[in-house]
Length: 345
Ligand code: PHE
Image 1 (cartoon, rainbow, N blue to C red):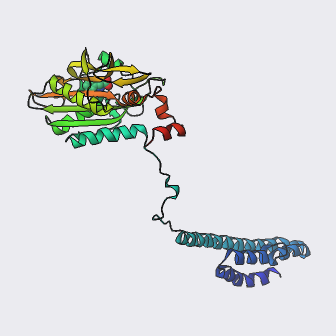
Image 2 (cartoon, helix red, strand yellow; image 1 turned 60 degrees about the horizontal axis):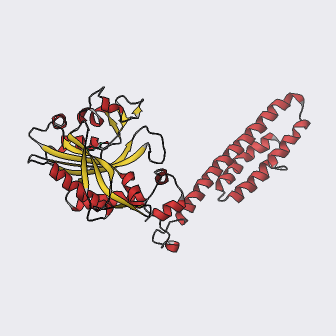
Image 3 (tube, protein in one colour; image 1 turned 180 degrees about the vertical axis):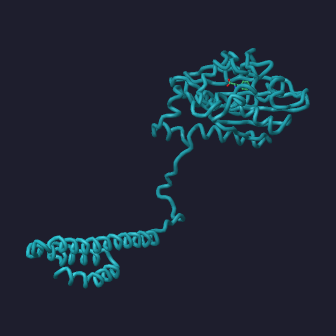
């Protein structure tokens, strides 16, 4: 066919392309026109028979026809693809009512189990379970907890600062939630908070740069004293380790946000290499920090004094390791499936 004939036919071909309803049909048309012995391809071959003067125009006309057809085929192909995708989606509905094969559910990580247990215990006793952000600022993590800028206690916290956002850091303890709660609720608080905390510690058998803390705070206008704190800690330890007869003691210590501040120990003995928490123990084990809320903390939270409160904070991984006989904290965070299965629930 010469260019004129091709141009006369162009409309007809384009209509045919448009009418196709399958990739197969489209491919057939494409091959009839642009394939090795397709109509257009053959027309290109006649270019040698054309006089030199006419060659340029001849070629231009053919190329124009060819690219119109190619464009049209491409558009149609996309249209067919879209259509077939929609059809596929229509037929591929997911039946979520199908029962799971082999009853193979995943398990809960031992940390999640502990968090849920503690949370349920305190909820049942009427405490609020609260949380705050893991990205905190100086005010909540330090200032309001009676650790103003340049306070030496800040250094012991090995803080991760976020360079990109001014004044922000990864919280080094859950005590920030104390501040958020008191600012919110004033002098009427019974709460625990369980969450992730961060310190720039190298990872080894007993340290991890990320670990969980459990924080407890009780505040009231009525006098609260160390006896209440001790009683609450006894309950917590006894509940956590599932041991009725425990013995705990306070050792004087210093936390800027408590006055007085103390470290909490509990009695244990070793039996066949296993650690047993018991009032009949012969050794003391440190389990966390505690104290009475410092007046400056009340001040920072706009709480009128006299007000009374106690708080304690414990490291969750440490308690879990003690209870389950896990020797290396890294096991809690690597992903050995055998380990996870053994401790999972
Ligand atoms: N926030 C303290 C720490 O991380 C623990 C603590 C909590 C101490 C509450 C006293 C009262 O070391």
